[in-house]
Image 1: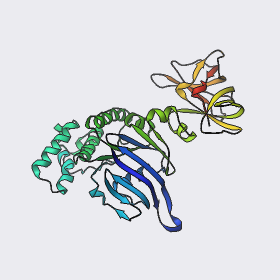
Image 2: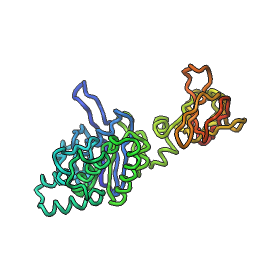
Image 3: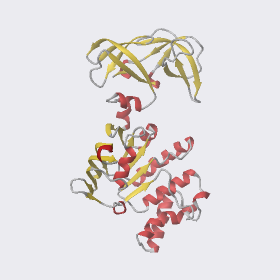
Image 4: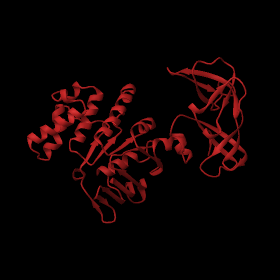
Length: 359
């Protein structure tokens, strides 16, 4: 069953001749127990879409349904107030009351709904226990770590038992190491409680780790949607291929085409790639993930030869940059991972045909 349906949603900022279109006909669904990530660069419309679902932005046209309730209908000029939509919302800033305890922060919305004291206490204790915060109820936000504050914000969103929880960049305020731990906790929590969640993020690694499905937005439209695996392994467009993962971009000239096999002349040699995204014409862009490039000190199939420029230590591996031309050349090189630091010199870089996509 669909918990959230968005149909042909349009939203502008401003009006008249000066109107700036932000959403340009977005349609999506969120199924019960599913996590959907809204992914895209700044200005793509992902946060605006989340806020429109929450009732914090007013669309121009389209429709929004939460389960069987219509909460926005552009054709009838109807818009349900945000407080009646029964949605849990976790803000990027957490927005905790600094002068209220953890217990009171979580209970605040229930008190506004005139719920009985004993029911409030039971609900708050239950949700704090679910999030491992049961012992922190009497503390104030400034006495908590960033990760604990994030969990309080999630507890406040969950205490209503909402049909859908909306997460706006929920991990962006945490440092890098804590983010890795928090995304594992958040994914486990969502699965354990069977939540239906719509999450905004600009971090594709975070989107892939937490979500069941990704909607990639580009300039107010959905560029592509699918499972994290399909978005990463079989992108339909150049935009999707470049946005997902760490990539090499190679400008090439098409020498030959045989069905889906395209022979490209690129810097360092000639390679065969797999055509994606329709006819590439006489010029093409080759995209290959860093982890797909194989480094060899001898000639090998479907490889180009380039001199090593530098290696950078990443802890579990080295990232090496290969680049033709002088040291101050602005030519974009090709990057690859190596298990150890490489000696200076020229290397053969194998680009597997199925992993090298021509757009």
